[in-house]
Image 1 (cartoon, helix red, strand yellow):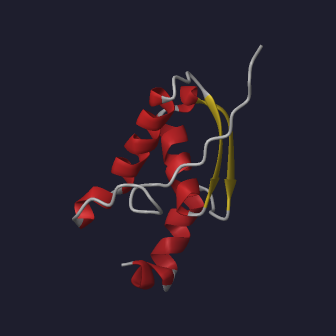
Image 2 (cartoon, rainbow, N blue to C red):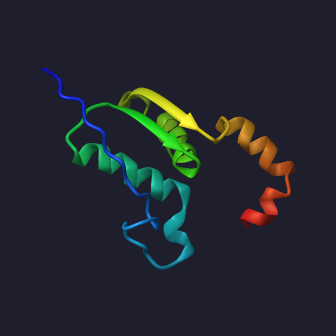
Image 3 (cartoon, helix red, strand yellow):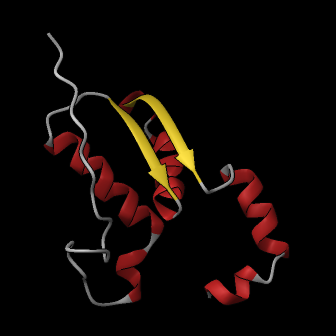
Length: 98
């Protein structure tokens, strides 16, 4: 019998998670790798991932990199990566995010 579990994680720098010094430690690829390691550390071969905001961007990047890890992916409050990249290039948000 499969026992469903829900796990909520704080991404690097949020909540009670580690807060490494230096901007280089907050590169999206570093954060994606954290989530990849987290799924593995829990002993899961695959997962259904529900993600929001920057967690959504992280999950999308991981799904593109390692689609075999996902049973399902639900992303809320962030556009598809291709749409996001195009909109970000043209938007004032780029300046605000910098």
